[in-house]
Image 1: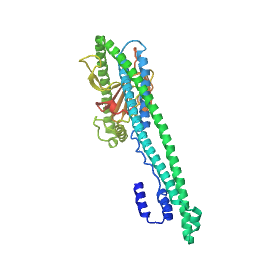
Image 2: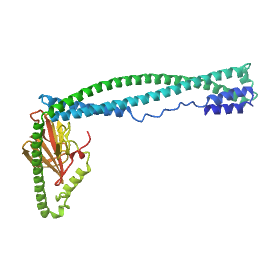
Image 3: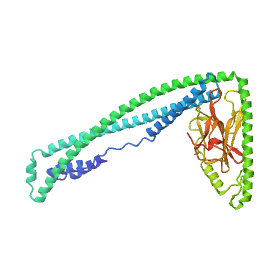
Image 4: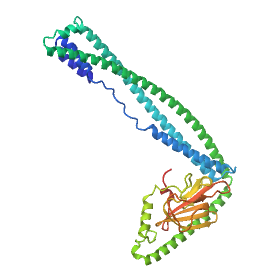
Length: 430
């Protein structure tokens, strides 16, 4: 567009005298600002990918620590398989992140290469225009002395105009040189940036190959554990039956606790009828304070902190196939969270401790009420709260137990009244 205006302007100025043409031409051509087209930004930022990589690396370190504790007894267990599965999944996710980072670098390299190409064209154009200016200046000024031209003016106004043209001409040449230097410097910087990006790409590709080797090694280790567990079918079936009995005992316990809470709440409602709200879906009469706590708990779905700071869900909620035994299913009314030895267990929300007990095979158990919601924490080694005690979110209520195989696993449940719920939908993402 700039060049089109330049050519049209020349045609219009041809009718001017030779001397005026020389200075007017310089004024039009070189007083116009020179612009370099900006590149569109890369949509996926490097900082986002770096944050993802850091989060996955943190998980991998966490899983490594848990896995080392479960393998210390030199006996393959389902908990070891669960830890291996989590580590395998995290490793694959990490490789995926590296792939996305390589793609990002490819886009950055393409953008820089395009930018370099445009800058090179701009620099050539600037040099050609500068050369044309010098050549035109020489031809139009041949035989005409500059001082003679200025002082031969017939009027003071004409003298001033000629002097101004000369100044504009000098400024235009200076700006043209500055612009060429600026573009040349930017071109050099882009070429250095391109070299750095290519080195980053080579480093990432090497890292990706290393991670793939680690992944293959991990898959072999996983398959070895699966094969070992498959040979202990009778033992695993016995463990499943035992776990089923423990689950049934836990369910009976929490239902008794909730039913007792309902009776107590109904008794209180008769005494303080005006302070009691309508019954909840779990048939629990709630005071205004209890209703507010229930509403707050429900409003924080997907935002509630985990009952342990580190760990992963080793057994999900619901009914699902056994990881190694074909045709066998398991049912879980809560979630199991595998964590570190001696890990502190925390209340996930503000509430009141309503029950502390011990369940055979499940160790210490604490039940906390949050309005008409209940959370239950089992497999505790130590308990740091008392019945009736008010607790806040993240208050320590005890420490997790470690079994004979070196596995530290918390069993966690959520209930609304007499209805059991999937705990994972309440917990925040890690």
